[in-house]
Length: 206
Length: 206
Image 1 (cartoon, rainbow over the protein chains, first blue to last red):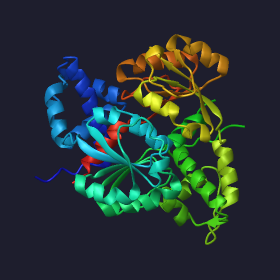
Image 2 (image 1 turned 90 degrees about the horizontal axis):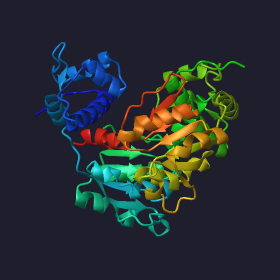
Image 3 (image 1 turned 135 degrees about the vertical axis):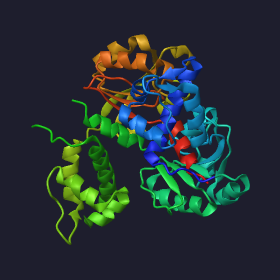
Image 4 (image 1 turned 60 degrees about the vertical axis):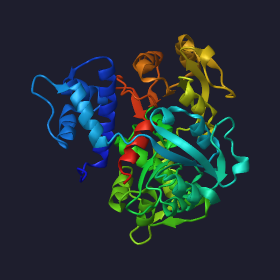
């Protein structure tokens, strides 16, 4: 079955809609208007309606969307590809904090292992995962069929480690390092830069 | 002095350019072409040139940008508003992980205190900050002139806590909760949703 081509930003919003619908469903709410769903997701109603047309029409004018059927269809588009094994590279301060955070596992993303250039200096403390040397990364990724990595190494090491991840067969990277990574076209990177987020916010403080 | 009106997304990119230029400067590199700077920032050269025109022209055709003077001018635009005091609300798993992460302080954002609805159940472990009850939030924010908050509470509590933050005078929120927050126009919110980032990446895994 060929996958519908949906722009990356729309996919991100579909995930948002999915989570809101899950909450509505848990609260036994059966229908939702596009205005209410759009407001909860922080998007314009026109944007919501456009996003939902990527995989067919759902809304009935005046009646809104059926929560359960929209959930089912979003789930099949997103393939609810949870339960993906993940590795984390860089067990310094941020990496260790992420390693101890159990929210990923709750969402179905289990961090199987952590890697560090100097595993003996890792600050992973009480985390249950082992911190392995980066030299073992490729074997581990291949043996465990890992496609998804969280990168939390310092900027100076980020590109070199990324090259190793790509070489090992990693297809998607959640990048917490301050560097923009250069990757081949078949590898996807999402960037999270906490310091820039704060700096950006502080710009708007009067 | 009135502030130049620069779109929010451009501000974000200016922060990126600033960090790249800092690295170049540390490495004693004196000039950089717009192509090289754009590539390092992951944007198109046309985008870079457009962003830099918001506060005047810097590039000399064929010679590129002078690293040091561009740094100085970016710094004055961004007002390098680091050294902002920050509070964190929600000392559960993610909040505690963020509390132990010392990268914020390194960038000049010191987390003064953490707040939780049930501070006695906080998982903050070895973090050096106190975890105070949310009931003390308003007094603390006013007394310490705090304008910036990191929100790491569960979705069900997020809007209620946000209302309290806004009421206390918080002007900018880094939101890690899965909820889109409703805030008045003078309050700025940046969202970081780690689970959705992973879900989004996993969509592109083949």
